[in-house]
Length: 449
Ligand SMILES: [Ca+2]
Ligand SMILES: [Ca+2]
Image 1 (cartoon, helix red, strand yellow):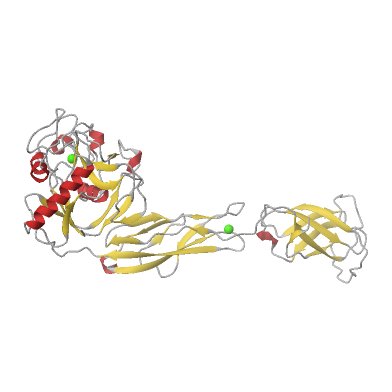
Image 2 (cartoon, helix red, strand yellow):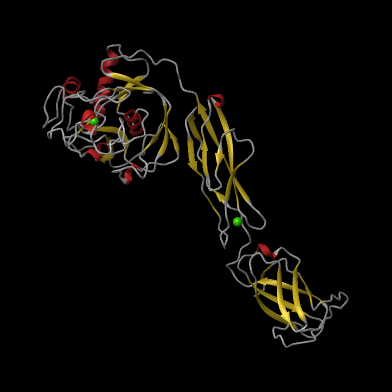
């Protein structure tokens, strides 16, 4: 029973008067009491026949949570503790007692634990928001309160529940900021934990991109930050579209205005795998993911040989983040032209199940989005570079999906899809070596390869 002795001394007062001169004689009989102690209590009171018997703590036992305590009172006189209210004449005196931990479930207040916070990158003027998380193993649970340490940049804030937000002004970038989040429990004593992270604030690159090597087919997509995925209350949303993730695209790139056509594919690859919607200006379909990437590689070789590519630029598939960033073109609505809840506008922008007649249609016949991209909704799904995976949430820069996987992503819906499956946030994926008659692609021309 006498394990883990706790700081141990109690001073015990009996009756109403304190007599401190009573000798602590040997030979007395220990008296054992089982006392249930209440968290936060600073005093145990026992009603004895001679009035209130108080045990004053000389140690900070109100840190204790759910202790079952054994008090062993070594008295110099007769046993003096009475749980029987009829007992009288309990001797007055000064005694010492100590308290043992008689259980294994008891802990002192422990410090909370604040989860690591990833470093962030953000553009000036963009909202950075994420939720900090912390745990505290104490029982009973203690309230955890988040705050920012002194030195956080102006405008940065965190709610007591841990929601961080900051929109750096143009005066606050470009720079790197060290921010420290603190979480505080309300235990005794009050304990805290902190985590620091950096926020790199970028200034939008207003310098001009290299000259457009193919103005007829390519549009420049400037770098920026956007929210990937859909809010949980979006109509027709699927669970795969979350959690919403703040994505920074750190470098601009060109993107094909159009889905790659059968004519283009044939010219580069020497074959046309399309089966069901033949036509030079129709999007190529029934392409494996690998054929799409091979097309990009061969196109790069051809265009470099012709001296048409800026140094360091290569064609490739867009990452899924680049694709959605370009599709949305600054919008946060269900489609890149609005929410269109009753689907009265979609036909102006997309070939889908209601207007396609069951085949893909020549590219570029519908309205483009605000950045000049056609058929981002519908016609054919478009392969992306990424292995399919759940979005990470929080804030990320230039995400490229999982490092390995089974399925490659394709985006945007197709001429076979109902309207809700053509939204900006819709995702699909499949094995990369499968041919679908409504999956094609469009390349980007980007630096870095
Ligand atoms: Ca605690
Ligand atoms: Ca499309």
